[in-house]
Image (cartoon, rainbow, N blue to C red; front, side):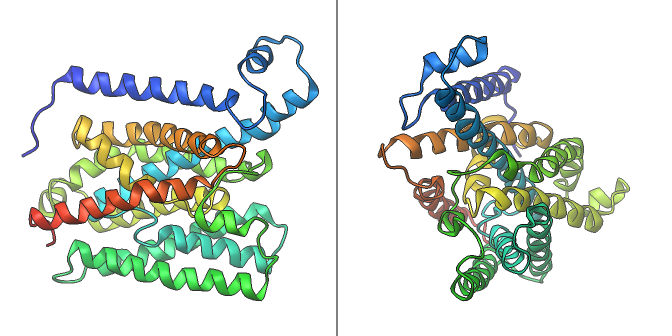
Length: 336
């Protein structure tokens, strides 16, 4: 049984997460490879004179990049929290079980067949993510299927979709501008126009997830108890997986195959505040947004004037964390 945490612990976690989000978001606006910094940022928000070049850097480069990091982080963290709760699998997250790869394959295929039609890319990403989520869902229903088996199935699907993406880029190298960044996950070069279509899906998906958080709490009581409370567990599982696919697919459509956000963040939040999804889901979205902004900021300045895609940094962080979870899961008999 989960130990009760003092209310002030949860309040401190919420306050710390919001504070971290504000600090890193502001810092991301005035820290970068150019000399544009805090004075220009303050001049912009206070309405004081500012050069056209500095204004362009802040509004056309850093603003869309920060907004993209905020939305991608919130969407992927929320998707990870949903998937882990629905599948009752602490090892699951969008990139590990193949949802990101399915969405990425759909985006590249759409870009190859229908170039220039950016409006349908989030829809294509959602369809690719949803198909993958459905396959994983039915695999997880198999008798005697362990948590690790579901993860291995997801890795196999990721390999298949990865091969498909590489095939598209070999046959049609112009299928996606910035494909190398897309394949590892990165936010450099993101424009406001890239966020126009995915943002409504992400905002709507985040709101819907928070609204139905109590359904996950009921599901965590067990199928028999949930059924006795009048809940159609199978229908809700499919609906919530579809919601996770919508969030992950929309994020992939502009951030690429950004991984491990949905693995790391929900675990950290549950460690701090427990397993009440009414708190876990919104806090995961908040911290996920802050986490990706922070990692993207590090990716920009660690090797300045050069920068690395944030997806590479996330892989360096997420890979060891995933190995730790596998070892812990086996040690405590969580493989069943």
